[in-house]
Structure formats: structure tokens, C-alpha cells
Length: 382
Ligand SMILES: Cc1ncc(COP(=O)(O)O)c(C=O)c1O
Figure 1 (cartoon, rainbow, N blue to C red):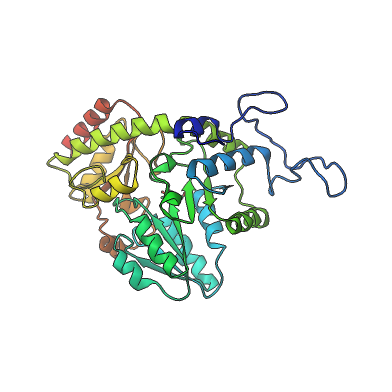
Figure 2 (cartoon, protein in one colour; figure 1 turned 60 degrees about the vertical axis):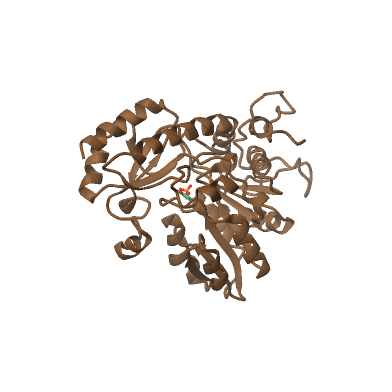
């Protein structure tokens, strides 16, 4: 596509009218197989695991939004990460942000390490620690920024400089900000990963994941893993994400406005401590957030005094739903120690700084005054 601005790309990239019928929405091609035109010849598709017209449209939209060479859609975010590490071989070494989605840790520690791939967690917000942890066999540095749930930022350009000097690639989980607010490839990263389940879909009605590569070898490898392992996004889920992407810039604007208002409110509340939101000037990485992000998003977390206080808060909150996940139009609140980090031992959780009173909020697009009033009444009950 020509050099269109972001909101135009969101509506039009990969979403041109159907050439056959003129339908303005991408048709959902619910077909596992495609009629061939002869022996070994086809109209572009032969079997949906290898390629599907609806998925092709989503994949080109994702590549355009992230400024990448190719997009690849998977059944879930975790399937996308599994496809990412399929680029590695036994004996390779991966550095991963320490403060990362616990599902990523589960996949790395319980599955990937069994293939003879070394996984090491490092505080990637500390560039000196990243430099020290690089090894001759480090092939990939996988970072999540901002991180979950402590909203710790990693300097993407800084990590890329270090990794590239050592011959390693950098992949960035861009789920928390979406391509609307952060462009890792433009900062030097090699691969972007998304759980499309979150902001890209935006309506909490589908699971999905994506990888966006910047090099021909990524395209080749990710097409192969899609065809060989088969964890591809279904045509209907692709349609839902395509539909969600059209309103991504609009939704993000409201998420962002509400996020800032809620964070301001919580920052002065006497029962709230250790509020983590990069849009507050008191966040230790506020300057980095301003440098590498185009906004602060709508994810944040804070501490109450105990698990009992957290339970009371979650029981009393009304508009916010006590549910895992994030990035949908509805506001969610969740108890980090038993949800996203439930599979992490208490010792490791405490070392990470996630205590029993930590609550994570995903701020939706409702009216911000209603959201603040809801938080006020739930905190009053604590
Ligand atoms: C930052 C992040 N990455 C990856 C995932 C995994 O995505 P999915 O649930 O679509 O497999 C999640 C899920 O919560 C997440 O928050």
C-alpha cells in the first residue's frame, strides 16, 4: 500500500473489496480445500492449512500495521510463540525478559527447554545485564515491553544494538500496546509477536496469535511452520480480527484516555500502593515510554495490602469484571498471583515483585467517570 497514515491503514490494509463480488468486507472462506486447475496448478490456494484467502488478507494487514515483510496468523498467542522458537535448534540459547507473561515461561521451561534449547531469564530493562548474559550461542532475545503485570519497560533499540552486535535476533511481544502505540520493527527489532486475542481483536470474542517478520527467511520459516505444524488461525477468527483492526485506532484512543484518568485517580488513593503505569511522570521509565511508545496504553497494576483485600475488591467491583485477559472493550480486573502468574511458584513471584495483593486492570472504553466511581466504591469496601 502507498504511505498511508495509521488510521487509513487500519481500515484499508488487506481489506480491499472482494475482486469477484465487490463485497466491501473480506469474505470468510470456509473451505478446507480448493479446486485445482490441473495437476500441480491452482488459483493461489490448495489447502487451508497452507493458505486461506481470508487468512492471507489478515496476514497482509498485520504486516502493514507493523511495517513488516510478512504476517503469519496462528490459533493463539502461545501458538505464535511456539512457532517463533521453532526457528531454533538444540544447543541454541535464548534470552527472555524476566518479567514476562507466565504462559511464555511455562512454554519455555516445560516444553522448549526439553528440546535442548537453553532458556535464560534476564532483567531486560537493564541493558548491562543483557550484555552480560549474551553468549556465543545466543540466537534470540525475546522481550515483552511493557511487561505483565508490573509494566516494566525494555529499551527496544538498546537491546537490538546489543543482540545484533552478538549476531542474535530480537523478538518483541507487542501485545500490551498493539501496533497503534508501539512499532518494534522501526526500533530495530527483527520479529514482532502478538496475542491478537487482546487489542487487535478487541472484543474478547476470539483467540489468536501472530508473528510479523522483517526478513525473507522469517517468511519462509513461518510459512513452513504454519504448513508443517498447522496451528493456523481459522478463517472466521481471521475475519473477527480484520473487523477488530478497523476500529483499533479509535478504540485505542478511548482506552488511552480512560487509562490515564484511572491511573491519575489511583495514584492519589490512600489504599493503593506501587501503582505501575508508564504514563505517570513518577514511573521510573516515563522518559523511555515517551521515547519509544506513541502513548501509554490502558494496562496497569497496583497493590492492596493482602490477598483478602484483593478478594474483597474483586467481589465488590461492578463494571470491571473479575476476569483474565486484556485489551477488550470491557474493563477487567484480575488477581495476578492466581491468574496470569498462577503457574509461577510463590517464591519466584515474590522475587519478581508480584505479591498476593496485586491487582491488574485492563481499562476498557466505557465512560471514565463511571469506571472511577466503580473503583472508588470497591476500594471503599476494602
Ligand atoms: C503479553 C501476552 N503474550 C502472550 C499471551 C498469550 O496469548 P493467548 O492467550 O492468545 O495464547 C498473553 C495472554 O494473556 C499475553 O498477555
